[in-house]
Structure formats: structure tokens, C-alpha cells
Image (cartoon, rainbow, N blue to C red):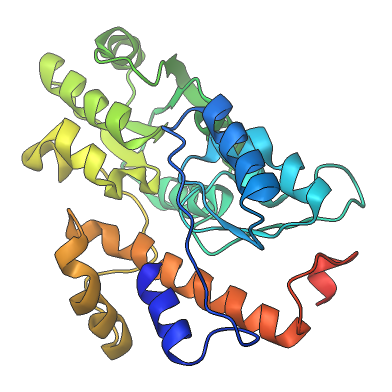
Length: 288
């Protein structure tokens, strides 16, 4: 994101002014995230917000920028409902340049449907807004594919032992599991599989591409699940140029997809402001 801001400013900025990034850490906690959003809009007077990384946090405060007509561009949070209007026909200032859970689910469930090795399907999800929103997509799109789980279990985002849930799936004969959770609990799930030596075919959200997943699961277990990503190691020349530029600041090569989304988000915002010739909120943000 800062790389994009540097590029925009080097080219003269936007409407004759330089872009400045104001950063707040929400600690992945909805109350803190709501507080940050109000502070950024009311006190810092920002013209737009990028983020958050946590889908549950975005769902907790999306009404705030919509009321105040401040555009938000998500670059990581993939919860399907983030960019839905607060109510039917309402103005919507929530945008994104990232994966959408429902699109991920569609791909994963199509894979399950076409895989002749799948006999008994199970669902696992964390109890957060992110996990349950993803589970809703999994159930709805699974139903459309004629897929019915024989096991449907939940776990807490801070749980470190999911052997109880896994043993229930194992007893039900589950050979394929679709999981929706954040990086760390996904890693703990893989550790739990190792504890009972039970490794069904496992399909996960793209949170399995996060550094937190690798740290929790370890290198060997992190190689087992199947998930989707928006940017692969086969990069275009422009992607490679950006990668070489930001790689020294990344803790993991897998973070590049999120970095690329963030770069693009800044460029989209800058172009939108130039096109509108203003940073003021408008009555129909999608008509700009």
C-alpha cells in the first residue's frame, strides 16, 4: 500500500495533493475496529479507508462509513456480506479488491462435486462472523450441487485442540472436509489431525495462505490442504517487479497476493478521485 502511495505521490499526487497513510491496528477485535473506524473518519478526517484484514470486523462497522459516505476498499477480508448494502436500496460505500468467500466456495464445492473419490462430506467452521458467514455459503452452494454433509462441527477461533470434532467426523466416515476459519485455527486443526492420524481430503479458505497458518501448522502439515488464491508464483512481469520491490518487507512469500491487492486498491482510489474531481461523498457511489 505504501509502495502505491509513493508511486502516486511521485507522479504528482491526486488533485494537487499528496496522499498520506494513517494506520490503525484493530487487534482483530470488533470493538477496537469500530473505535478505529470512528476515529479515522471523525478525527483524522480521512477521505477513504483500506481494510480491514478481518471480515468480522468489517461486518461490525460497515454501517459507519455508509452513514458518513466514506468509501472503504477491502484488500484481505473476504466475507461475502461485507459488500452487501446495509439494507435494500441503501447507498453502499463498501468495495473490495480481494477474494470473495462465495466465489471461493463455488470453486471448492465444484471440485468436491467432480471428485469421484469423495464419498462422505463434512463441514467444519469457527464460530466467528467470518466462519459462520463462510459456512452459510458452503451450505447454500453445497445444496445447489446436491452435496449433503454427514458431519457439521464448529470450534472456537482460539481453540487449540479440535480432536473431538474430528473424531466425530471420522466416526461418520468423512473422507473430505470443507473448513472455514482464520489462519491460526486452521493450523491448529491440522495439528489436531496429526494427533489422531486422520487426514481426510481437506479444502480450506484462502486463510491457509496466511503466515499465521504456516506458523501454527508447520511446513509439513501446511502442504496438505487445498485452497484458492488470486496470485500464484507464476507472476507477470509487472507482478514480479512489485514483488521484488516489496519482498524485503514481507514475512512470507505467500503474503504477496495481499500486497498486490493493496497496491491495486490505492491505484483504484486515486483514479476514482481524479475521475470525480473530488473526495466528497456522493449520493450514488457506484454511479461515479
